[in-house]
Amino acid sequence: MNQLMWLRTDLRVSDNTALDAAMSAGPTIALYLITPQQWQAHDDAPCKVDFWLRNLAELSIRLTDLNVPLLIRTVADWQAAPGVIAEVCRSHEISTLHVNDEYGVNEQRRDVAVGEALESTPTIMRRHLDQLLFTPGSVTTLSGGYFKVFSQFRKLCYQRLTHSLPPCLPVPPRQAPLLIKSDKVPESVEGFAQPTEHLRSLWPAGEDVARKRLAVFSEEALADYQLRRDFPAEPGTSQISAYLAAGVISPRQCLHAALRANQGELDSGNPGAVTWINELLWREFYKHILVGYPRVSMGRAFRPETDALPWRHAPDELAAWQQGRTGFPIIDAAMRQLLATGWMHNRLRMLVAMFLSKNLLIDWREGERWFMQHLIDGDLSANNGGWQWSASTGTDSVPYFRLFNPISQSAKFDPDGRFLEHWLPELAGLDKRAIHNPAKLNGLFTTVDYPPPIIDLSMSRERALSAFRQLGEAP
Image 1 (tube, rainbow, N blue to C red):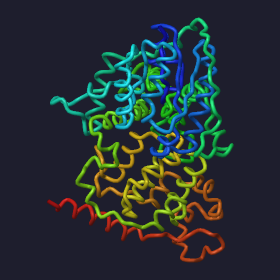
Image 2 (cartoon, rainbow, N blue to C red; image 1 turned 120 degrees about the vertical axis):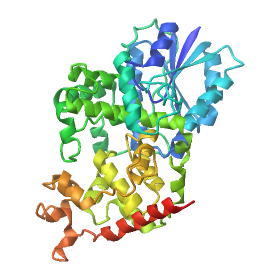
Image 3 (cartoon, helix red, strand yellow; image 1 turned 45 degrees about the vertical axis):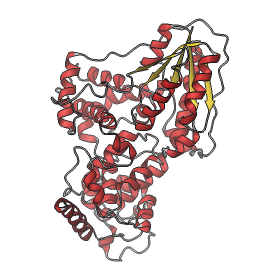
Image 4 (tube, rainbow, N blue to C red; image 1 turned 135 degrees about the vertical axis):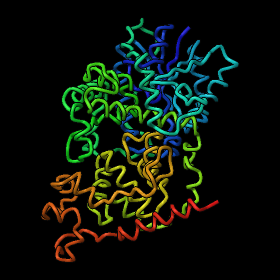
């Protein structure tokens, strides 16, 4: 009997656990579900949906080389998944449905429902570990609970990886042809606008692209990663987050590339490699949090007491933040980068998140949603974890009294103003000092259409500190 591989965020043929298991067990068919209403409910960005489709088209070519037919079904949302998958299994005489696990609450409920729908059929469902190095629940405290602090989680991960490094699986061998025609991958999905060609050009699709980016980064930039990663004008980051989020490349492939560049060392050796491996483990940590503390998947703070914070309803200030017109150049440049490219430099993600949640005292969930609606690498766990860290509402959160000053951060990490000049060309005529804080010119700079600051930084800082202090005094 046949095997069915249900593709989700695992759009590759190399080191794909479920695909390897399916093709090892028998003749395999692949399936992909297009679920527009579900994607809209999850605030998936149009550029991300387009990226999925472009990578699915590339994957279809690779699957054809392996003689694996690709079926595509379109339904409104995941509620329809059990019925559709049961019908595919029936019509194609599927003995086993193979899936790689996903970890949000809705994803887990969807997979449970599919498994229940198959219980009365000849098809069994096998779930595989793929998008993580460790199964959630296997890296725990001495009392058996999920870690709340990253440094403790990381320490145990290093111990486990030192004793047992997960291997990368090769591309499965080609199977005998099946008399099943593949479906054509659509170029667009109704309800999701197509991104600009410029944005698309920044993120070409396919496994080959992802693996080449990883190779170039690990060979040419990894050694200096810890020195260059905080400077947004520098090409100091890997630029593979979108490929990881869509599963075009695996975390195991990333880890092995870092280890090769670091002579096999995990937590010693080259500081750049160690720092980047830590970033892979941060990704791992936040996905484990989704399982251990599912409330974070449902719009809740990890620290429930922080939901009592007096978040402000300030739609005009929120809109100014969203559109990059706050009057603080580093904030505005970062937000314009997001709108134009579907991506934002990681340090800038922290800066704009702190600015919204603390300087403006606007609910961090507004920012989390805006990011998901525009990020090509939008990932529930990483996005939620980053926002809650910055807002001091999350696990291992930054202390509430730590609030980055956008002007000093701008001067420190973009000292020549190159990043600001690129995204705020109206400020290009200012010198290296003034460009970080045009308001200090006291009206002398009047020939450029750039807004004044929407808040007073000192006042906003004291307002945020007061709100958190009062929270600490609450019963």
